Image (cartoon, rainbow, N blue to C red; front, top):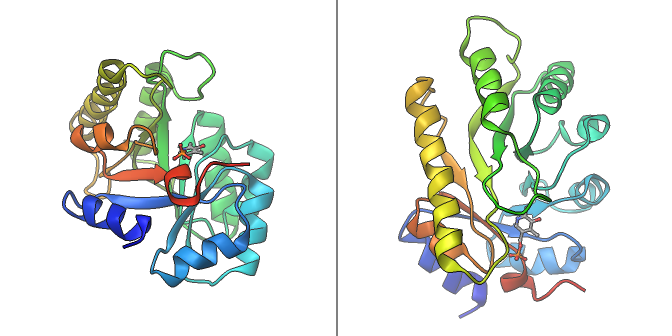
Length: 220
Ligand SMILES: *Cc1c(COP(=O)(O)O)cnc(C)c1O
């Protein structure tokens, strides 16, 4: 059994979706997993996701998982399946603007700051609340985005308790938003967990894991 099949069996029990993170990997590597049935792939660079979308089968679901610059939003909005990395209100407004132009409603996750490392991107609670007030208010300012959940990255550490507590923090935040803002039923995703920590993430309520090196081998 391939790593992909074993992983899918493991994740299927908890109905967790696998995003195969194919960043830096050639198209052939994606085609191999595609042939085994994988359809959701994650990329973190705009130029790369655009090129791969052009070259590969049209039924691939492209997930953008990296830090996204506002000026590059336009290139991915026509085809992206889900943007995991909304880390500022400014960025979300740009997605709205570009999505409206192409008459699409774009799915997004709000990336939350849960790690101790200062290098990771994410919204703070203040900005999160500002976005949610706009989103749930009776206006059409965010008419072309669909906020379907939250995303977070734990600190890169061997300390499993710390990782677990960061994932718990994200789950709590998700519940706070879901209940506190009476979010619609399509607000249901918690994107957390990578090759090194996905088991803990699944135990803590992840609905989507983003896995690269475990599937494709270490990035060169
Ligand atoms: C690279 C990356 C992953 C996958 O990491 P692996 O350790 O290779 O599984 C997941 N999420 C984000 C945001 C990434 O940049």
